[in-house]
Amino acid sequence: MKPITRRSFVKAAAATTAIATLSKPTKGFSLSNDEIRLGFVGCGGRANEHLGVFSKLDGVKIAGLCDPDTRKVDSSKKFGPDAKGFKDLRAMFDDKEIDAVVIAACNHWHCLAAIWAMQAGKDVYVEKPLSHSQWEGQQTIAAARKYNRICQVGTQQRSDPMQAEIKKFLHEDKAIGSILSARVNRYGVRDSIGLRSTPLSIDSNVDYNLWLGPAQEKPLFRNNLHYDWHWDWNTGSGEMGNWGVHVLDDLRNNVFLDKVSLPKRIFGGGGRVVWKDGGETPNVHFVYFDTGSIPVVIGLTNLPASPDSNKSPKCPGPGSGYIAYCEGGRFEGQRGSGAAYDKDGKLIKKFSGNSGGTLHQKNFLEAVRKRDRSILNTDVQVGHDSTGWCNLANIAYRTGNAFSMDAAAKVDVKEWTSLVDEMKQLMGAYSLTMENADLKIGPMLTIDQKTEKFVGSDSEQANKFLRREYRAPFIVPDVV
Image (tube, rainbow, N blue to C red; front, side, top):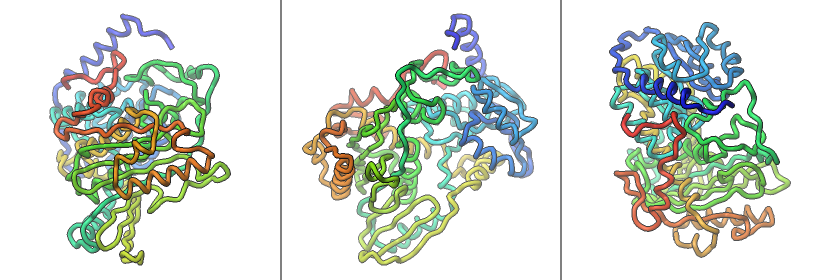
C-alpha cells in the first residue's frame, strides 16, 4: 500500500470534515410504499446475506455497494445490477441518491462508519457488535440522537415473536417461579487460523488503507485477511463479540427485560490455547457478571471436546444459548427455540421461533418510513448495552495475569464453580492443567453503570481498554 502523505491526509481529512458538517436532512418517508435506496458498507459474507433479504423486500432499491476489496463489490452486483460501486465509504455517504446504509464491515469500522453515515443524513442498520470499544458506542448513540437518525443494530433474534412469549412465560406468568441465576454458552468449534513465518502479503485488489481505517497498521501473521480479522484485537472482538453478543443479548432481553444495562462487577479469564497461530483473542473464555440481582456466567470455547473429536465439549443447556435457573425449574433458550423444564427435568413447554431473520430488516425499514425509532427492536442504545457486556468480558480477560485456582475461587457462585470445573476437564482432555495452559484470570473489576467506566481497584488498567487509539484520519470524533 502507498504511505499516507500529508497531501492525502489533508484531502481525506477535508472529506471527513465535509461529511461532519452536513445539515440534518428533512426527507421523511410518509407512505408505506416509498422507495428506500440502500447502500452497503462491506460486501462480504454477512453483507451478502443482508443483500439477499433486502433486495427481495418491497420498496427497497439496492443503490450502492462499497468495499475496499473491489472483487467483493463486483460479486455483489447480482443483488443490485444498477447499484453504484464505491471503494471509499465517504464517497457513498456523500451520494444524495442513497437514503440509508447497511454496515457489515469489520468490527473496528462499525461505529465510525455509522457516525459518518448519520452525519451525512443516512439512517443506519449496523451489524453486531455495535462497537469495537465501549466509548465509541457511546459516541454512536450521541450521533443518532443529534442527527435524529434511525439506527438499528443487527441482533436479529430481537425481532423473533417467540421472545415476547418467553418473557410472558417467565415474568408475567412466573410459570416456573422467580429467576435465581443464569448461564450463557457459546460452544462452537473453529480451526486455527495458521501462523506464517513472514507477514501476509495484501492482495492488490484490496485498498488496505481503507480496509484498515481506524485500525493500526501492523504486520499480519495469519493466513487470510478476510474473516479471520475477528481474532485480532486490532480489528475484531473475538468470539465474545462475534457470537457472545447474540446470546448475551438474549439474556438481557428475556431474563433482565433490558433493565440491567451493564453488570456492576465483572470477573473472568481464558486464553488462546492448544493452537499456536496468529490469533490473539481467547478460544477459551469464562466470565462472571455480578448484576446486583441475578448472577450470570458465560462459558465460551472454540476447541473440540478432545484432540480426536470434532464436536464441542458438553455443557449444561444449549451450546449457543442461555439457561435461566428458576425456583420451580429452568428455562433453556437459543436462537429460534426454547424449552421450560420443572425441577425434576420434565419438559413443561416448548417455544418455537423464526430467529428474527427478515423481520429485523423489515422492522428497520418500517422505522425509517415512519421516522420513529421507538418501534425499533434493537435501537442503538439497546445494541450498545448488549455489546457492552462483551466489551467488558474481553477487558476482564485482557487485564488478567497467570491463572490460579486460588484466584478463581474468589467467586463463590455455583454456576461459576461448575464452569471452571468444566474448563478444567477440557484442558485435561488436551493433557493440560488450568495452571500450565497459558490461561489468564483478571481481577474483580467494578463498573460505574452511569459513566460506563471502571472504578476502584485495578480501574486504571481496565479503563485503558475502553477507548482505542485511532489511525488518522479515521478518528471517531470527541464531539459528533
